[in-house]
Length: 280
Image (cartoon, rainbow, N blue to C red; front, side, top):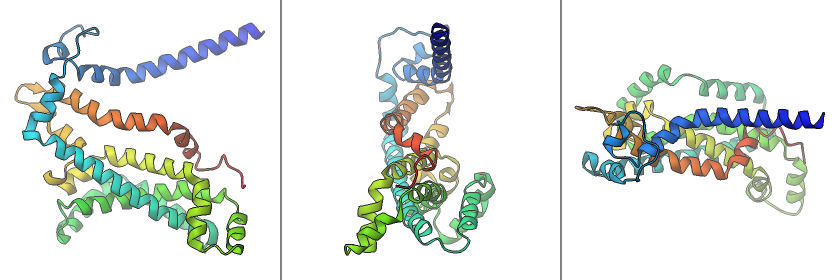
């Protein structure tokens, strides 16, 4: 019986690895293509063993008069600022809702999440008209403000779930000892919900890092991020530019994959919205 269970477990693990490999194969192929020459990329059948070349990466940096660095700077700066602002504001709001429980808290949370679930295509035109009337089209700070607003509801839901799992006794004990409300928020409670903060940061970073529609419509050329650059450079007069796509995809994807690998434990906990924690 034990032997059958081990065999069944091994087969299940093998099946899971096979599924993971099947899903990761396109990513693996595009990563390999980043180190191939243009001729090697288009060779049929595909070449799996070859001498790596940096030709594609050099071409990516030199293409469009070196605009790659501007795209990369915009992606990093907009993502980092928008997510940091969203998580900071969400933590303050989540602490207030969790500790003071104002009337209709559950209804407010429902409304916030409902707003986040609205498809982007349904709101991009009104937002474009509003941004144009305010003169915000092509403004980096206006894009940061928009992404921070769009990331706020999901961050609030994650952080409130974690804060609800932290007992008020910590707040009361600290305030009895003379601590201020801000000391309780940032020195007593915040360290206990660190996994939730990390999860909110990463989840929203993934969204902002990959977002294309709003940056393309509202940002313009000066605020274009890497997804916009990827779409703009997809085709040339000679057809699909696979060398440029592969190189840009590698540079664009690898940093986020590495970051997610190191914080995957927090992400797994964040997916449960803090419900795996009992009150402590």
